[in-house]
View 1 (cartoon, helix red, strand yellow):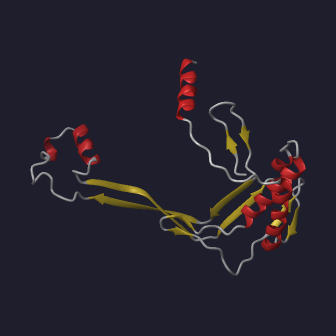
View 2 (view 1 turned 90 degrees about the horizontal axis):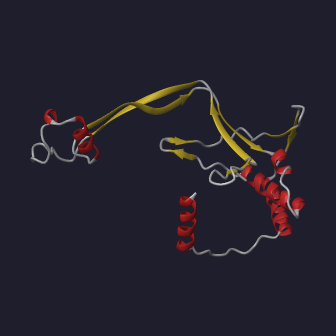
View 3 (view 1 turned 60 degrees about the vertical axis):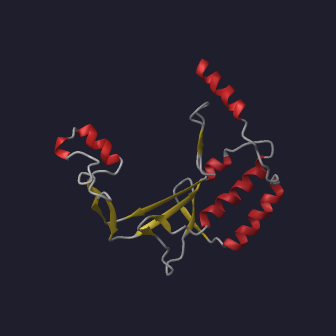
Length: 198
């Protein structure tokens, strides 16, 4: 659904069926600074020497452990978007058509149902600390089929009907029951030894 890359063995790449991007216009970048202050003055309690007597590598080691003041300046501090913020979701039907198998048609219909459900699912508004995006309630989502010649045909998606259709495709495809698997440490070690011999 969201792509895969076998970077360890075959190098095969599977394109994403669903891709979502968020873009903002008229953006101003912000910066921020911070200062780490130790819980104690460790020089006063004779835990560390005066900083002026320390070599840089010793300062770095003490700073990592929280014994010294550490400034952090001009770091990325987010953005201010004065223009619109837009989320585009693409369901790649070309990649979907290329998937083959013994029951290709049923599999593709099942995956199409999953892809469309993922596309219409409301976005979790919490992207990162300080950045929560919610849709504009006054602006309805716009869906369109993009044809190969670049023309677009508007479509309407009813999430409830889509869910019913997708559930029907799942039944046709036949979803296997959930199962628990046990990690075999011996097999992992044997495989690791084979890799080291290469």
